[in-house]
Image (tube, rainbow, N blue to C red; front, side, top):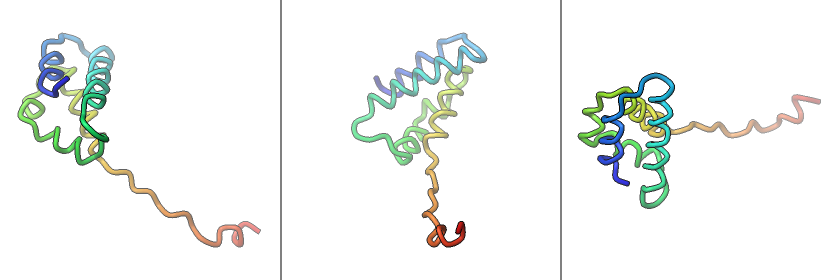
Amino acid sequence: MSLDRILDGLEQSNSTGAQASHHARRGFLEWAVSVAGPVTPKVARAALAAPAVLAAESAAARAFVGYLEQASRTAHMQKPRRGRARVLH
């Protein structure tokens, strides 16, 4: 399902609070499954630039945008420290 259709459905929702978050999470998962190829932070950032995302008003649509923002962040993994065994013994 397209991003616009998902957001349109979320905009029509009158849900608030936990229910809005639940609808947004389901919408995000539906979007992630419908994306061609892997869902990367770059793909999420591209989705954040869509006009429908920028115009999100309902609680569910704003929560969906929040999930997109979380997905757009890259995780910075640190390399394991070398020589740790010497430090522990």
